[in-house]
Length: 296
Image 1 (cartoon, rainbow, N blue to C red):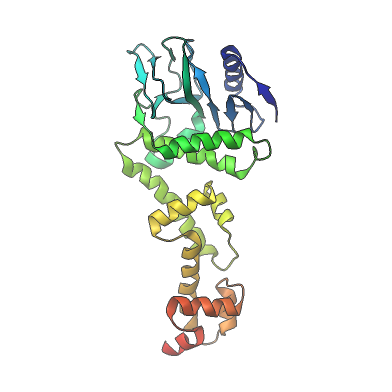
Image 2: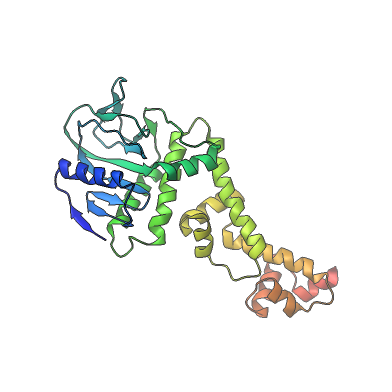
């Protein structure tokens, strides 16, 4: 990883142009003060506006406003005053610039790879290369937290190539999309629903195997924490509790097969030991496996 100290606006713009011209280079992460980058997202921690006309063909620029609002010119429209707690999206190919040069308290210009974001919008709405309205879109504290978490992870040379940072690509992009499409939340909810259904299908297919939370998180490019939150919000259970109930459900079906022993059912349903199977089965159903079999 290459560390670059960027002390001036000109140097930051030069880095940005090099990165954008190369379509994000092969290096996985660049941390420059104050620039933070993964393979799909670049975030600047900016403290001054730049009145330089810019057009980016391969990236969405999404600017998260800070305490000091400032006007932004997009194409030939009237200036848009970027407000604190809002994001202003600028679509690929749109000529834009700050109305003037001025020092401001922290705001965050975020550059998201066009193809990466298009993949997500296609999953959510069945459309690629969507053009967003050049206006203020309120964001939640969760989105702001994700942006700062992204910068913190990208700044850490020990974790810059970690799964956590890769997951943050998706989590931050999902959160931004949710803010950009408040008029149609059901479509975005359908994307989250697809993620949950994908995990459910995987658990129902792979329940005999030993499955970890990290494995499930990798499956959908989420962090374990955010996967638990989304899954529980949708199903009322954590993924691992859901897996436990799938295994018990399958065990009940197999108990009807008289040729199978309790030990064989235990193994077929993915329980690590007979004692764990018996105690879990009794906790869920109120009966031991052998006692339950007699009821069938």
